[in-house]
Length: 105
Image (tube, rainbow, N blue to C red):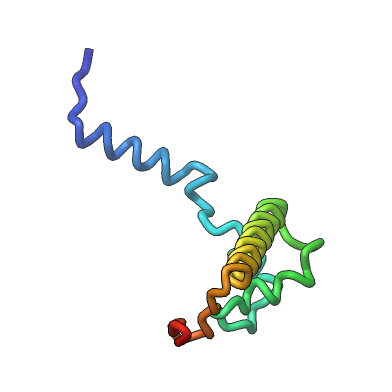
């Protein structure tokens, strides 16, 4: 039986992983963004805002990714509302954006 070096085995595993579909496209919406929104400069959610109206034209992987992100955003928004409600009930002021809450005298 031929003995292979650990380096050769590691290199073969890395090559196999690089060829797998999960690793080949880590960003499922990248191709859709290039195809549907070539003029959009990335940043501040610009790509997602451009892709949203084209949802039916997106690849299935990108559609799933967009739905996952939207679900996560809804959950975060719900938690923020719960925190504001709890603060209001406790009489604790909510901090303004960019400022810290100061205790009331």
